[in-house]
Length: 215
Image (cartoon, rainbow, N blue to C red; front, side):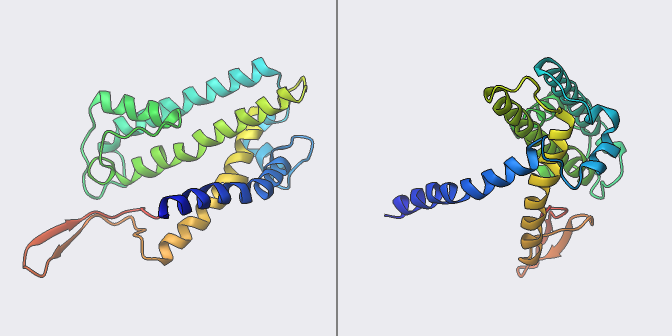
């Protein structure tokens, strides 16, 4: 019975959210309906965000941005032992782990062959992995939106950079901020201080990992 209720909850919840979420996505991702933050997006992205793109230019822009994501995250992972926000002195990672982690998070696979609190510094968790958990799914949402435009018979796919910014700032970030606040209020750690060393009731010493967990 519990399994049936769980299936009903998941399917029913998805069905209930599909209509309002679909309307919201249509409104914020439609290039024919300028959003309130588009001026900010244009200021950030410059001329590259203003021009419409056909499928070839859209694809090239997406691939180029993914290459930048990979190189940026690879560099942070490789240099984490020399970068700030590493209060617990996390050491360097192996090259194969760096490549696997950067490639999987860039492709929105998020394959993890490590324990985050053991292997990664706070900067790596926030500026590389957490950042990729926004821009990588935002890339997927942008491409899916472009595909929908193509299926609708439009010659122009929109603009990848504008779609990316809308997906990240107007869809993913508000949801993540809301959930993070709920987690903080419920007591989930959110600090840049190092691991806490405590004495247990038995008199033993224990190290408790913490950090920007709620975010």
